[in-house]
Image (cartoon, rainbow over the protein chains, first blue to last red):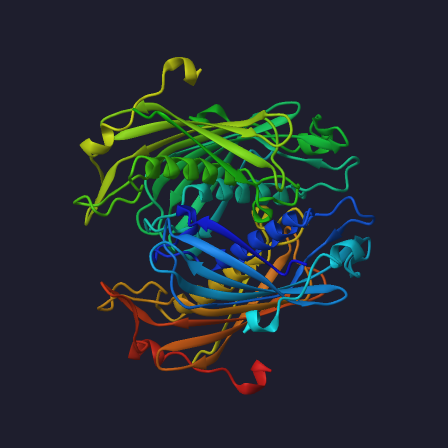
Length: 145
Length: 145
Length: 145
Length: 145
């Protein structure tokens, strides 16, 4: 069963700031891009309207440690690993590598998303749909160190 | 009846790019901020769920001419004017002034939004709700030159 | 000589807004992504530090007409064409197609960028470097209609 | 000496996503807005070109816990507190409150920024300029719990 996914993307001009480096908020967007591509690789979309009621994945925690800057046109590999799969939530680890030039880990992040349905009372955490949960595995501990 | 609105905002770090100036896509966000504040000033929200069916305002045209750059912490005045009010659409003009230091017009933009409802067939243009339409006036031609 | 370039990108979650569609400011980022990939295809970067003095390409005009919305995970083709090449400026046309499902033109935009150097007096328009200018051609009129 | 700062901002349409709530990456932008306003309140800018060499504040860590969503036009108070002041780095805590309607803490974040100069070898951590460091105090422990 899958427990990881890798994407590559090239840093865009609009993602840089006046310091000449990628604005740190964009690393959180990069995380999400990898997460969503992981879902597509499983045959799902993070936006699941076809389940009843529709579910969503709001974030309850996100963090990132930054080791080195990324710059315009750098090629970034985002390596996503499933750190923990609970009944109603998934936690991912993300390792960011600059892969143009010498491969270098530039950041490491964590994201926890909770499976919810929306009702008139607001969001409510619900168990991850069974067929999806069965497709997602926790990464081996050795990979998460 | 109101035909204009002014807002001020300070340029944020995340709005700059590696050229040290505000990324041009942000001027289109600034336009919208002025438009939405204009609606609030009329007692409305651009997101009108309380009308039945709910209406939205997708954009069908946007343009901007840029005369001078904006930089971090510059104070920007966005002066919005109603250029044209049609049955199902409104066109706005926006003048951007840098107001720290010598007042200087740095950009001028146009935005056309169409009033729509959402149905299973997608979006459908509908007349602007009467009570809202009655509160919005076209700016005098002299101001639009 | 090259006068066009095409890129594809998938709509990201963070590019959508509460109306469930791509926020219109992102079309201006998509334009730029195509422009910059075009430069790379010519062996250049839009950020040219190796020329002396370094040059940049601030925008003096941008516009976009929106025909249909883009949604999360839609696949977008951006077709860039060189509309006009002047001594110190280039104007591009961009056609946006949704290419998942039936191919559909969803937007059309224009961008004019001016070649500048930065000095203590600010930006100054300069002729496009000769070796770059020689590599860029205006698209045939028939393609620009 | 100052150890805290508060700002308010209204959620903008472009900050929402298709789930109808503020995209989580924006909380990291809100943090920065408060940090920069704090600097201005001290008579400084986060971009200090007038010191020699110029210094910058890249982030080495950021995290955020999300308790409740923010929606379009919600009014957010960001309460920044100095958690730790070291020789070359500052750590801030941020508490996000929704203040339209019943006051509610919606998120809590942390940001660590390092004082650097830029050289041809890249960024290098340096002591915080003395006159600035003297103006910033660590918040009382009781406020940080």
